[in-house]
Every structure is written in C-alpha cells, then in structure tokens.
Image 1: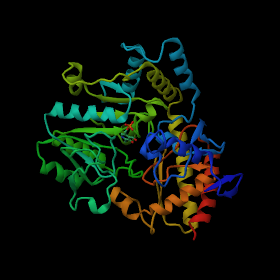
Image 2: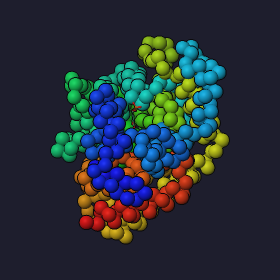
Image 3: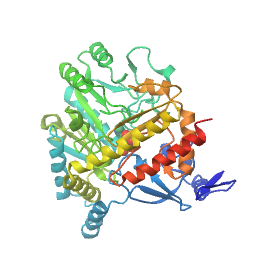
Image 4: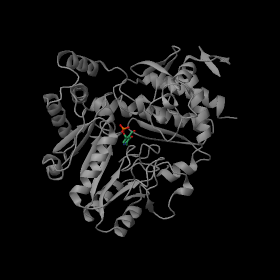
Length: 451
Ligand SMILES: Cc1ncc(COP(=O)(O)O)c(C=O)c1O
C-alpha cells in the first residue's frame, strides 16, 4: 500500500480510502453501490467533496477529475446556478409533489427546442428506465419483434437490452452480427430478441436487417460510441443507418445518455445533422441530478398519451430534479455556443497534448475524442484510428493502462482505470487544468511506460 503526499511516496501506509472501503464491505455489497466503482483493479479512492474541476478524497488529497461522475457534471462539481435553483425549489416548494408541476413542462419545452424531431417527452430518473420504455414503445408502435444493438454499446442494465457489450473477441459472432449474449448472471436467457451487430459498418447492419426483413422494431445505438472507448461515427455512417432504418420501416433510437447536451446542446443529432425517431437523454441534462428523458413524435408517443402503454415511476419528473434540469438548460441557453467552443478547445488541448507526449516518448497509443468525451488508448503496437469495439479490444493493452492510471491517480489526476470508459471534461476545466494534467501525464509516462 502506498500513499503520496506532496510528491513523496510512503510505502505500507493504510489510507483513509482503504480503511473506509474495508468498513463499507461489511454493510454494502462489494463496498459501493455500482460495480463500475469498485472493480478489483481500482486504487481505492473514497471521495468527500467536489468543486469545479476537482474532487477530494477522505485523506484530503485533491484530484483533477476527468471522470465527472461518468458524465453528468457538464458544468463541473457543485455548479452554483444549478444548486441555487434546486435549493430554491426544495425550500420553497418541496422535493416532489406527486402532481403535475409547471417546472417539468418548462423542461420539456426547452428540450423540444434543442431536438427538432421531439414533439412529446416523458421523464424518468435513470438511463436504464428511459431505454426500457423506448424499446417497449418501439415494439408497440411497429408491432415487430427484434431490436438491433451494437458491439461495445451499453444501454443500461435491464434484462431487455443488457448484452455482454465487452465480450471477449472469441465470444463475438464470426459473421457481421449474432444473438445478444446476457450481460450478467441471472438473466434467464434475456435479452430476448436482441441482435448485436458490428458498429460503423453499414454492410453489417444491412445484412442483419435483410435477414430479419419485416421483423425489426428498432435499431438502437450510441451515436458516438462511448462505452467501448470513444469512437466517432464514420462519415456517412449515421446517414446510412437513417436511410436503412427508413427503408426497413424500423425505428432509429439514439441513446444520447452520454452525448446529449455534451457533444452539442442538441447532442450528436445536432453535431452530425441526423435525426432519430426516439431520443434518450440523461446525464448532462440534469447537471448532476438523476434525470432521464424519452422523446419522440406525437404519432409514436400516442400509445403513452392514451395510457395504453404504461410508463411511470414514483420519482419520474420530481420537482427537485426538474429544477436542476431547468437551470442546466438555462445555462446552456445563456452561454450558447461558448460552452461547446470551450469544451472542444480543452478537449483538443488534452487530446493533442497527449498525442504529442506519447509520440515523443515512443509509447504506442491512439487518442480519439468527440467534443469533451475522450479516449487515450494505450495500444500494444502503433495503430491508426480504432473504428469499432473489436479494434479497441484487440489493439489495447488494458494492463498497461491500469498501471498508468494508478500512477496518475497517485499524482492527483483521476480518470477511470478501464480504458473502455471515456474521460469527460466540463466547463469547469480550464486550460491551466489541462496543462497541469499534461505535465503529470508526461511524468507518469516516463515513470511507468518507458520500462
Ligand atoms: C449510453 C448509456 N446508456 C444508458 C446508460 C444507463 O444509464 P443509468 O446508469 O442511468 O441507468 C448509460 C450509463 O452509463 C450510458 O452510458
């Protein structure tokens, strides 16, 4: 066990984070409430508070945070405008009322202004819930059976869609697509009627649609891959998918849980100029509060309007979270394009900076980013752009990445130790923060990657 204080490494010191996690394991299964936060290769970090671009651990060590709670903190930790709105809401009106409330209408109207295809919305609390509803809606609307998803794409942990999105190469189908493998134990054969296809390949999708002619309810994807490492759609890929889904009368669902309000205010749809039939939003929309949204046309949403398709939840659209989203949307409106210009600029500074350092040091790598979601892939050999999940899986050195991440965590920079997880930047990150991160990346690379 090592601890670092002011650049000095102390061996065999038990940290506050280690002690708290040891205690937590007696009351919380595995020590925390999400498997992704306590993987066996995590260097223990128990956080006590965040502010702007930084997070502090229980020992008082600060970190420049490049994880941003897995994406929601688009305005950084504790953004004043959002916190003020929430405090006002809960002190004047309560956390939730259990009745329709105006704040939720305001949020819906503002989201509609950003996503032109959306005529009606429903809110819920998590991405998983909104996606379950979207898949049900697509099957109800089309009367068809199959859902097509993609290798490396994650759409929440429900039995409806949780496939083994990080499957080892030998478990992937030999052809362009195959049946979905269960994402975890206990799924009793689910996800049912889900096919998983190679991404960024119009040919693979065309084949899958043709082989299931007239039976595909929807194609669902992250329009920029985030959960298998950051990969941009190839030029024309999204347009091709849009055309193919129309030809086959299947709905196109964009899971913009990560990309919505992140790669542009209007998400990947604005950035790439393609419209989905159903859009799912979550993380950045709440600026750190648990919200998700499902939006579509009046025609597709009609079964929900008529109450024939059940959609609901005790916490769906609660006023506390809606106040947060309302304030987040106001911030986006108030600062307009300046937000995305800044996010793109710091992402380019970080991406180009990492590329320059690792190239100079002769460390094989590939940096890919779309707006403020970025992957620094450490690869076995020199490679070109990685275009799909298989290429990431085959080319990346996951062990080396973990060692590098540990070194950076010890030096006060945090990002997730699994290189499938993107780094997330926020408006609270300054050019100075990025310059500091780059200095520490160079030091860490010299320390652990040049052996
Ligand atoms: C693209 C995408 N879809 C869906 C989800 C599931 O969201 P939640 O964890 O809020 O259920 C996530 C979560 O990280 C995600 O990244």
